[in-house]
Length: 263
Image: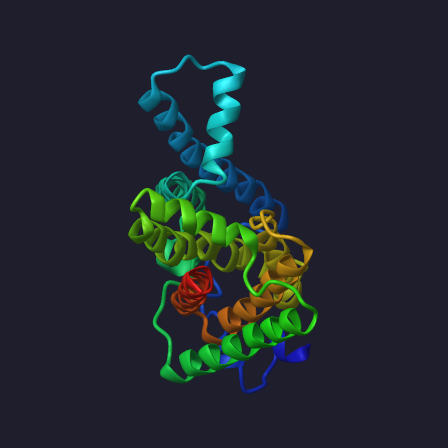
């Protein structure tokens, strides 16, 4: 793992952040503000629950609230709106946390350009990784796509909201999750005692925790993708790269689900 040490002189060293004076939150500060960002995302997503209750004009009691929560976590339209409304809340919370440190938003989150070589490496590596998991799924008789995706797509079709689902899953979700995991969490933890390897692993675990709607097998796939994206974040020093790869992966999953549910 020496190749993941920012102080190493190996070939990948130029990809490490060349910002030695950048003030960042360390381990506990990053953990605290990470919790604040997650809370902000949750509040932003709860706006959809409020919209649902207001739309139906029902009193806010235990029964109606429970029904609203059930619909939010299973309906394509509401879950798409939930993902989208969580994004501005996350951006605001991140801006506050970074502003307190007196850093530039783009520098802190590594919003920088990347090379075509790194994009090609990322696309090929992601394709091989996902195909490997799919091959194991077929060999063991498992569904290639989790049931959650099929259910969400079905209800989105019924509401005529497939386009909104694509925007939510392939644009809003990658930006939100990458800003948090490979952006904010990786930045602080990689400059703490965890260093780069620990930051990649821990941020991937946190990112996996955002996908608890899946079973253990698909959580394993999510975690492995997180490790790959974390490495590519380190290699390229850009989360624009991981956002694009994340979006492409989600788009491929949506298309695959469409094909499987139509067959």
